[in-house]
Length: 432
Ligand code: GDP
Ligand code: IMO
Ligand code: MG
Image 1 (cartoon, rainbow, N blue to C red):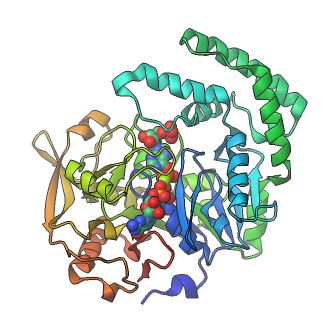
Image 2: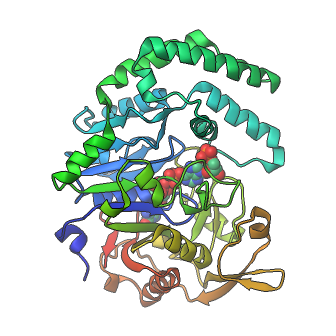
Image 3: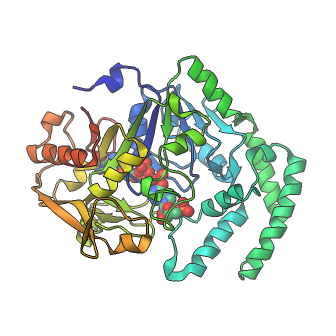
């Protein structure tokens, strides 16, 4: 029995989503945090929504690592994250109100992280509007335009915000430039004074938390501290490997943990891939195994509504073509399967084991979005178990059909199964 997650050192672990986001990363991070010293976000921004349920309280983390819920853990927002400082302050305030202590002893923000500014949000919205039916379905948090500025070398960073005079000057130029674009798009221009004031005020509040997180991490690693890298979004939302252009704007795959924190690959010990026992996606883009009946059933149970935007998630059958590809590009060593209980009343259960495109069988997802959309899933069927799994705490307490199902999807994915989650709380977790 592999209870060693709690018994042996946890080592430096990259945790990523193996599907289209919302796999239950927050819950698994919370569980794994028990053995970690430091939890670090390396990419994404407040487009993420990671749910942790503990002691009857529900916490939805957007920018702050999910490890913050456990006392005594240090949480870092790495250089690869895009930070909306106003959103971060309100997240800190809300967590404090909920009784979570936050000081610069348990939260640090990289001075190299890029800022999300109001013109990013406005541009995100305008670009979506202009795309009409071809929209991406973004979270409208300004993530794409913020990473766009970063890549174009025209972004503002936390370090700029820490230098008020310099910041105001740079902001003024950026707002002028972006207002001409917004006006050309027929959108309202951004008011420099208001933004400058509110951002400087947020910067003042954030100052105690700002640090060189790269150095902090390396010093901690030298002292033998163990780090958990908290991925946001999921493999198929990756800017390089996802279903482009229906993706987010960062590297959500395992490599992003290195570039987004400054910790080199040889310091990483394992990659944990989190995947749901079925598939969900929020926003537009191909979802080959989408099934409206399954979605209706899950939504009726009050499940699968977005943690950030509240949108109903699209739902489909487990897609082993996708997860096998995810295992390959992330180097997944261990799998955590979540939401097994979502299939408690489904019989039979389908698993996608291949795609068919123009009469040919494909074993990997095609790169092209239209081709992926035209892929027809090839299914195998497995019997359901027609009973609740939510109180199982050992694999042997799962019905045989549920055991067979998790073993089958892990085998098709091609990585070792180490966690099965049967409910949103810490206790509802089976270690193998
Ligand atoms: P994340 O973005 O990957 O952290 O996932 P989200 O928090 O956005 O969405 C996952 C949802 O599933 C949340 O509401 C979790 O509380 C919930 N959840 C996670 N694991 C399980 C599970 O095994 N069973 C059930 N019923 N809910 C789960
Ligand atoms: P977590 O970390 C699910 C999706 C959006 C949209 C696309 C681009 O909670 O798993 P963006 O706002 O990033 O430009 O939107 O990516 N998306 C997510 N879907 N979970 C997330 O985060 C997501 N973050 C972004 O719905 O389709
Ligand atoms: Mg989420």
